[in-house]
Image (cartoon, rainbow, N blue to C red; front, side, top):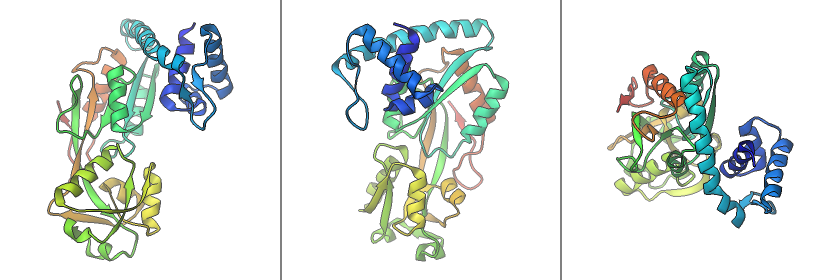
Length: 306
């Protein structure tokens, strides 16, 4: 049993399919499938049920999961020790992000990090807040951008920086609310809404805002991709709350909400004040030292270091 096989096994678990896992591991799907099949032959049991549209762990696969995590964590610790000695000439760092991240230009920041540390491989995963939190706790992620439901992070996690983002209401061009430019929450009772999938930082913030203001939204459509949400709003199916930067990039009317002004908190989180992985520590320094403007109130806010 090879570490490479275990890594491929975990990639399928995390990504939900062999196709997505192959993309994440930067290999062709046939090679990844062969690697997992070889692992199954060595263990004498099928690890995945492949009969449905999405691969599902078998009982044998569920039994292997914690052992695979422990073995890979040990191997990663060994690599981290070598990377520290090598002065970050090599290494690997995993970062998660909510899909609607706007307070940081993550591609640009990672490009700058790559220029400084070309030998470090960066793995990026987008998922729900709950999935990212579990990834941090399990050691599968070094860092993650979260929009937590509660004021404080779950026990064991540390906030390296925080941002405040303004939420606005986007509408189709020509919508009556677009002409006004601003509205009150109570005036949206008759509006149809397009909503983001449950469990995301955006959906949680919007649901909390609606409950606080007594707004019983009429959801006409819910989606899993922010691009589709924007397209549906543009087509006139409904209105939606999004971070201002998303609406502005889409070229849609951004209606400002008054009383209260809605927003959400975004946190760059890790498992402790100082990551044990040297590559992750270097990435934290890069992301917090860069101090990009947040997509918050006008003029933006620099992240608050913790």
